[in-house]
Amino acid sequence: MKTKNSDQDEIIMHYDGTTAYATGTSAVFLQSASSSDIFSTPDRDPSNIAVKGYKQGELPRMVPWGAENDLPKQIIEKAGKLAQMNANLWFNVLLSYGDGIKPVKITGEGENRIIEPFTGNAEIDRFFEENDMQLYLLEQMTDMHWFFNCFPEIIFNAEDGDKRKIVELRSKEAAFSRWSEMNKDNGRIEWHYYFAYWREKQPSDEYPCIATRVLDNYSPLRHLREMMKEDEKKLVKERRNRFIVPVNFPSPGRNYYQKPYWYAIFAGGLYDFAMKIIPFKDAIMKNQALINYIILLDPDYFKEIFRRENISGDKEQKARIKKEYKDINDFIKGEGNTGKSIITFQKKDPQGQPYPMIKIEVVKNEMKDGAYIEDSEEVSNLIAYGMLIHPSLIGPSPGKNKTINGTEARELFIIKQVLMKPFRDRILRPLYLIKSINKWPADLHFVIPNLELTTLDNNKTGSVTKVNDPAK
Image (tube, rainbow, N blue to C red):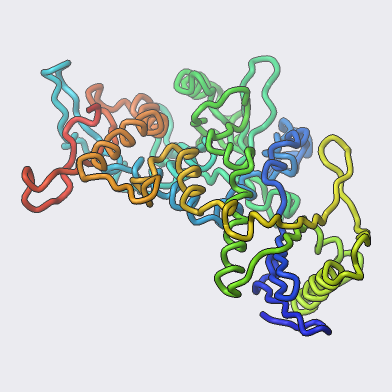
């Protein structure tokens, strides 16, 4: 989208208004906030919420996830804008999937250990037929790699006594899940709250929030057995036919919501740097121009203008954005503006100190020859490093003119598969709980087998073969 100001300077604006380039001043406009801000502010204090079937305040308070109770949504939106990050997450999910969840029979130990498919049990076969276990695995692995928090739900049938069995296993979306405040007497998180509109709406009859009992994090099976012995009449209201089994990958200092190690990409500024490279290169490639100025705008900059000027329509908002870009461009161009100041509104940081919502940076001469414009390949490699992926497995190799051979790639792939074991063990945890409650055979086990890449001298088709022993 192009507009011209009164002096024939051309402003080339991205369709959504988030970036623009002014030809006359060679200025790049970026709506960019520090991603570390989403971690610098403490999580909001717990609060009472309306829960379907309960009076206000009857259940423990909900513990927000992030300063505005929308941290998962922010992570999804930010990662969704960076192709390298999306590809890395996708790679980790696909690699974790392996050959899917398999029920197997394990006999013997050590060198005599034998693993073979578990067949011939009608109840187990029916459970796998009636539950989409491979979709469950994909959903759980997705939440695990994105958030280090998973929320599997087990559901009982309507029978009593020995006929009472767990018949369903579902994955509750992590982005819609919140924990209740811990019980101070026993240290347990006892309730899971499920709501699709955190921060956007308040739970109500029209948009209900569902509460489900949570099993003890360290002893879920023992806790479940204890509750199954309680008076069923008293437990009808609490939906005791279903429970959340807490599953996570632990991170230091976190009691409720874990913090994946790869979030350092946000907290350390690498994400923000990567997002600036794209419009930089876009402006240079499209306009064959140098960059003289970088104008950084807080994402709330235009929101505040729209609020103050009561602008709501999409067309009107884009027109106002264009006008603001033109006004700023007019301000920075020409000798007559030397020494002038720009006045704008401010926000306050977590420490209460004000900071401007607009910042104009003059690009040094060294930037003009590209000496200090970081190459996107280097940034991609750093992001891959932060997400525990060797760049050669998913994209270009680090360093110019460097390649790896098939053997190196295969070994890197095997090493990466080995690192997936802790994630797989955590995801399989609910199935062993189901096995005990349903009294399935003792020699039944659940595995997620790896896939092994073979060379053409061993496999003339070059196809993928399964690893017999997932422990290898």
